[in-house]
Length: 229
Image (cartoon, rainbow, N blue to C red; front, side):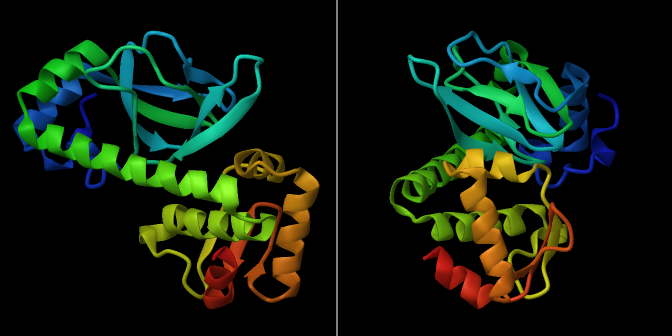
């Protein structure tokens, strides 16, 4: 890693607060790694030897029951951080939902670097608290919300994460999902038929436009937020 100053997530990643010499030192510790959709970076319950910043693509966090059933418990987007600094085993599996590019660090070396840089530790703490908030929201979404509320909440979240500049689910917001409807259904704990039916109804009601199978246009953000509860 020798081009950290030109990195497209430079101002949003946990390393944003580092000065150029510190960034250069961290960059020499890392390496870029491209992974294909479906590839697993970390396995639940295994020793987690690496941590990483996501540069491009979307990954999923998956937890499994003892009988092999799986549940997606979170999504990871560009500028998000993967792994468990100062930890051991991975609490979940991390797999790519789309082709992705990561900035990968040996966990032990990263831990040593972070211990000497309090600003980086503070950013890690803030990220952890943000993840805790998202996990609580996820529990509400999967445990209490109806199918229509889940799909509407999902679209609002995707608009916040995928629109240029993070513009969110405002009128006219347009974004392309990096995965298909079956994966959306898996994320939301629904069938693909239910997911497709909800999207079609939202389009018929004028809330959204569906220019293609993966493109979404927000036409009526107020109605979408109301449906999301």
